[in-house]
Image (cartoon, rainbow, N blue to C red; front, top):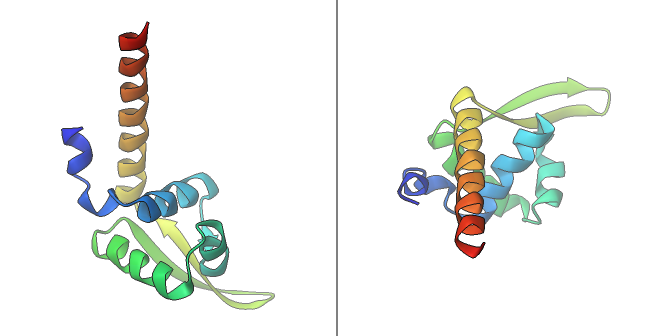
Amino acid sequence: MKKLLEYREVVNPYRLAILVAVYISGKLTFTDLSKLVNLSKANLDYHLKVLERSNLIQRRKYITVLGPRTFIVLTEKGRRVVKELIKLFKDLSSSMQYCEG
């Protein structure tokens, strides 16, 4: 659990959900991410700023056939952190199963 505390900005259910959703999807529009994690645009913007300051995500603007869109992507550090957290949760799950059985 000590390792988890190294990622203070991630120890928030919404920010963790944001990182995992973007990790799985590769990239998401701001609007899609807002719907997916069930946050208002203002609240999502706040959490994205926290993750940006920690260099875990980037916002990228693209011109699409539907007009300009902002996409959220993970940085290299963001991908590394999510992979480490997934491993940490797997290890925790394995040790809990060991204790039960």
